[in-house]
Length: 174
Image 1: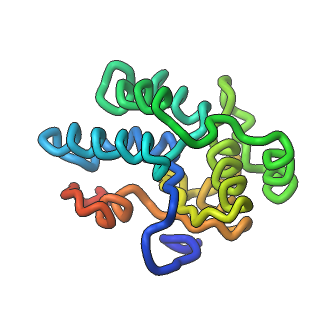
Image 2: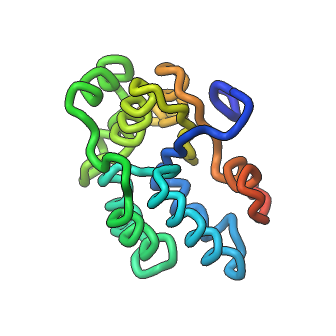
C-alpha cells in the first residue's frame, strides 16, 4: 500500500475528509493553531471545497464533542453546500467494488463506506477529489485508503493535507 494514493499535481476541487483525520487534528496541530485551522476548514466547507458525509460528522461529534473537532463538525455539517448524503446507486457500486469496506464489528453505522461513496460520487460527476484519511491499515475491514486505491480516488494523510494548506503540525509518532 502506498503512503499516498493516486498522485496528481495541484490541489483538488474538493477535499473529502474522514472522521479519523478530523479526530487526529488534536494530536497533529498545536492548540494555538487548531482554531485557525478549523475556521479555515469551515470556510472551505461553506465554499464547497471540503466535505464529509453525514455519518463522518456524526462519528466526530459523538467521539469528540465538546472538543474543538467535535464542535467544528457540528457547525460544518450545517454549513456544507455539497451533499451530506450519498446517492444509493453510488453506495451500491462502491460496496460491490469493495465489499469488505464496512467494519461489521462497529455497533454504530460505519462512516467509512460513506466517505468513499461521497468521494466516488463527486468524482463521477467530474469533480477532482482527494480524500483525507488516517484509515490506512487493512484490518477486519478494508481501509479507506485501500478502497480509494481500488476505485482510483486520490487520497492522502492528514499531515500531508496540512502541508498543502501550509499549517504547522507535529510529526507523526512512530
